Length: 118
Image 1 (cartoon, rainbow, N blue to C red):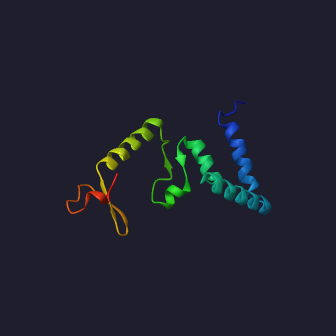
Image 2: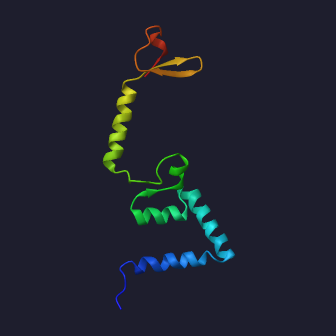
Image 3: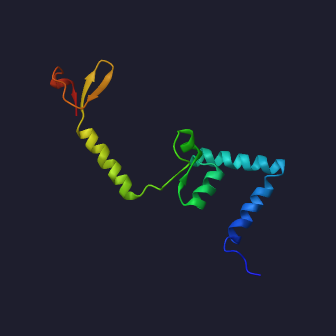
């Protein structure tokens, strides 16, 4: 009899699923999921989904109205986002005001040069 190539993956998942039938196991799984969530912002189910789908999956994405799984951010994506943020910052003109700092896309002709924030 030939085994499925998914057999090594299915055995631990079935064991975890059956372990959840016991109330003590449910409490342990809930505790482990809570600890995982506090430290990584992902539950145990999120970690399993991330591994299974090879995507960044988190229940927090769903809570924010985004898809549950998103593709991993590559180094190129990070650099492009930083460049975009730098370009947006370079195009703004910020001035000190009574309440703090206010930024505009175009220079404020009424503001003094001393109020400008670099």
